[in-house]
Amino acid sequence: MAFELPDLPYSYDALGPYMSAETLEYHHDKHHLAYVNKANELIKGTGLEDAGLEQAMVSCFKDPQRGGLFNQLGQHFNHIHFWNWMAPNGGGKSLPSGLEKDIKDAFGGYDGFYDAFTKAGGGQFGSGWVWLALDGASGKLEVMATPNGENPVPYGKTPLLGCDVWEHSYYIDYRNDRGKYLKAFLDSLVNWEYVAELYEKGPLKIAA
Ligand code: MN3
Image 1 (cartoon, rainbow, N blue to C red):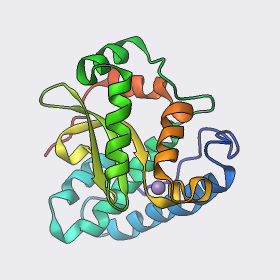
Image 2 (spheres, rainbow, N blue to C red; image 1 turned 45 degrees about the vertical axis):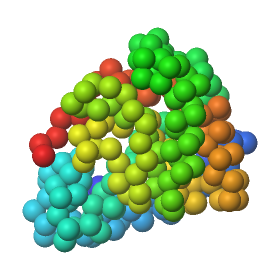
Image 3 (cartoon, rainbow, N blue to C red; image 1 turned 60 degrees about the vertical axis):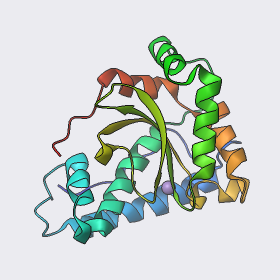
């Protein structure tokens, strides 16, 4: 089944002033669409057409011949969630209770998580993503950064929250100030209800 571009879960101007309509129009309508189209083109003839997005992604990760397809599939997966990881009037440190407790256990509290997330996101050299992920083996929460279209899934970890640190995600609104963008993302955009929903579902189960 061909991959499709999902609609944004809010209007283009819903995240202002923290993320502008112009950013969302380019990011969703052009960048995400391009990943969808390229993934559909590159997956033809691989035998992975009906594997499902997550499974196809993990299968390609291990195959050096399929690095190009992996990045397109990864970016499709990452952006499907990214739109839902933001909401109007989002962000801030009031988290759903189960998540709040486990973030305290893992990072000493919201502030510790905030520092780890902004540091990892700011330190990712070039294009990539910063994540709050659930490690499938230890059951622990951790912060990690990945390059390009990669995400925690091929490492046996489940992404609970991710922030796109490719320049296309912030250059219109923040120019080169990634730090300011990461701060706005955490303070004013994060949809913690969606994070909690993913956390409740538990680890993604994908055959290695
Ligand atoms: Mn992007």
